[in-house]
Structure formats: C-alpha cells, structure tokens
Length: 283
Image 1 (cartoon, rainbow, N blue to C red):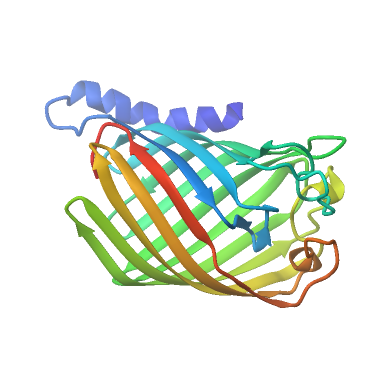
Image 2 (cartoon, one colour):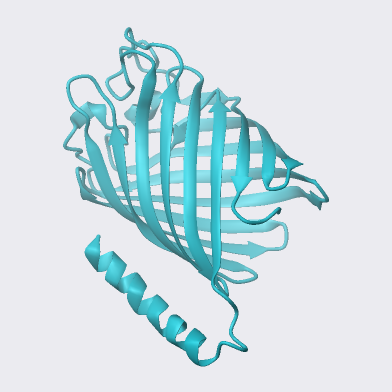
C-alpha cells in the first residue's frame, strides 16, 4: 500500500509543482465524488452470484481530478435485509440480517476522449460463519471507445489472502445514448469472459468466492437498459433492467442455492434501483 501511494505521489507531484508555476494557464484541481444507495435482485461478480436474496448496496467514491488524471479512494458494502441462517453455500453469508461483504480501494485513472486507463489496489472482506476472510489484489483496466463500440480488459492479481491472476475481457455495443436535460438513458449489450491464470487457492477456502480451476471460467452475453433522472440538484434516481445468458465452465459458478451443481447455461434477469449523489456537480 505504501509503495502505491509513493508511486501516485511521484505522478501527481510534478503536476502540482507545474500548477504553482503556471497557475494562470493550467487547469484547476477539481474535487470529485459520488455516493450510491442501490437495491438489487442480483449481484454477479466474476460470473458468480454473490447474494442469496435481494439485497442493498452502498458505495462512496471521493477524489481529485485534474486535466483527465484522477486519484480516487472508495468503499463499498453489501447488506441483506433478511436473515440467511439456513444458507447452505459456504461462499455466501449465513446469519441474521446485516452486512455481508465489503471492499475498499485506491485508484489512479487517466482518461482521454477515447481511452481510459486505471490501476489500483483493493481489499475485499467477506463475513462468513466461523471466520471473516479477506483478499487483497492489485488491478488494472484499459478501455477503448470507438463510436458505438467499447473494448476493455481488466486484470486482478492477488497479493494477499489468495493467489493467481484473473482476467476479464469484454466488448460492448451502445445501442442508445441519450444524455438529455434532467435525464440520461442508455441501452448497451456486452459480451464478456473470465480467465483464471494460476490457482486462486484462497486462505479462506470455500468461504471466499472465486474460480476453483484455471483457464476459461465463463462466457456471458447480456443486454441492459438504464435510466437516470435528476430529482434535485446532484441527486438522481437510477433504474437498470437487464437480461443475461451465461455459460459456466468452472464448477464454482454452477453451485446452486442448495449446494448442488447446476446447469452449465444459466439465464439472469437482474434489476437495480437506487439513488446517486454526485459531489459538486449536476451531470
């Protein structure tokens, strides 16, 4: 963590000095941030369903941005409104209503008109019966926008609590982008795959969600329609409705709620509803 902060400081320091020397012409440093409160029927990460029942999510991001370069820190948590004491899967929380998972991260992002690059470090916590395992990863994402098409690849390298490298390439097509006044509507379809390079071998064993083998873990094709309405100033109401078909090669992705192995092909219909507050601006 300390080395990451020093690396970020090395990048930001020259820009800060330049801002002092050329205050009249250089772009200002702008605070950025967002807080989201979301209710969701389905939380899918790396092709794996991570919730037993509909749940809530709360995340917050704060940072500084200057001329396309942003340094941000964020936190995310998930909570279930009903008890899950009878949950048979070890990688899902069993217990009374409350927090189930959480994450914290530090990220550096560089964005131009067509290319976005980001890198950071994150820590994931999992609340499980008997112990609460955690995993630390360094990660990076590269995205290229070309008209209606968007191509991206993300990588997560475990450095604590687990091993192995996980890759997730994707390609998206934006059928509709309508940034109207007071309203944003978007319809996008995405083809995505997961690849596990090297055994994950988490310290928490089966309590930590993730692929059990190596190589291709899943392939999915989905489409979703999302809308955002501004209610008052920077506060917006969000809805997302999606349909997704997933081919699940890895055994960890096929585990059913009763602990048995499900079908290799599964269809999802996720629904997300929530509120978002953007710091200092009305997008």
